[in-house]
Length: 520
Image (cartoon, rainbow, N blue to C red):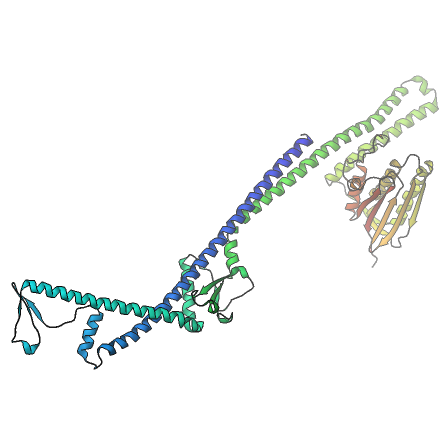
């Protein structure tokens, strides 16, 4: 798969994912806003109904009080002597009934109207025409009585309204409201509107003083406090307020997230999986390219000694070679050197495969790091002097006993020194420096050169398998990109660390840190 195709696939997948994530977050915010608005509407509607109930209760109270007072005044007006008969008649009138003015009887032809008992002897017989006229007059009188009663009741209501306007607003709010009943009304109205959330409330008078506060009321979360004016038609300077606090409003609103949280979790799992897949794909792509470079380099590295050995073998077939011992010795020496070179290249590849399969075991033993560094330096000093360079050592570490595999750790130092000579500046004599020093309970071994150096991003990757720093059009430096990977593996298995510090054109410094063996 081409690199451009991988990038196109990555861009499409990331665009689709972030679009999906944006839609989920937007839908989640919209749902939460709707949930919050519903909560606000339900609470405001409930508190408005509570306010209306208080107004109705107050009006009913004043009506009852005024009715009692009017009954007393009405009785005194129409029954000043206290006669029970007049009171009864008055009650009948107030009930809307016609007063009993005597006994009356009707036969088939006439209707007899009985008057006073003392005038019983003067009987009057009324004809049907007269009877109809008398009934109409009685109905008229009843209408007049009812009209007076209506006007009287209306005047009473006007008096009640006037009292409410002038008297009620002057009374303290604690005398106008029963707080226990108020709490019950709030709970009933909230339940009626579908809210069963816990709450606490305060009643504040027109002086902004708290008259009553139920337990649990808090002013910290202003968004969870709802205010309703009590008796809003009172004087504007004497308005009282009801404040209701819902401590679980946030939980009520965020309960909508119970569905979105798993969705977001699975979405992020898909994102992580996708990122891991893309990283693995790019890594495999790079590894494939590095393996191709490795195969090309390996083919070249193996082809050279094989060709040399083949040519030397053909020369040995010539009988004239046998007659010249010096030539014969030289040819056999070339075959031996090239065979060793070929074995060394194959051994490097086998070392890495064995480490991957964890089949190689380290033979650990106690060694003196200063002695080991000095031994490796003495071995390489001839190579450096042949290039007209210098190799210096500075053994500052006072504690230098380490626990390592001698062969593999020696190879680590050899590989770093070989790289320093490989990547030297062609027109500048190489200058190498090996130092040791103590740092806590560790020993630090540094190897520094004045070679061509490398970029900082390359310094972080040189320990990866098959990775080789690009050197432009130079093809004189051969290798598989396995040497420093082998170094990193060995140092890590020895419980140590290694890092590279380099500046392009100035040189490179490798720093190895290994734990010391502390003496008891």
